[in-house]
Length: 74
Image: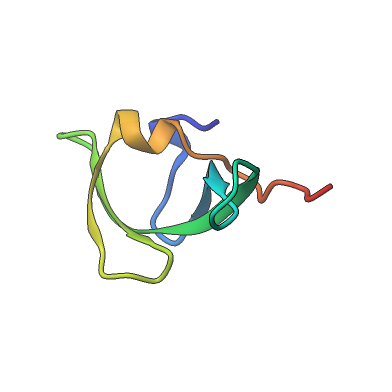
């Protein structure tokens, strides 16, 4: 987890969630990179690119749920 005040444009965060493995009840932990493109400190928002898609607006609360380092796979 990270705080909005420590983020800078160019930082790469990681979105980690559990996803289903096809048509089964099993799941796995998946992670996607989120690159910070620009920030608006006054409004506590940032333009970020999720998984190399077009940048979109993220709030400070959404960014604080992301991880700073890529999770280790076991």
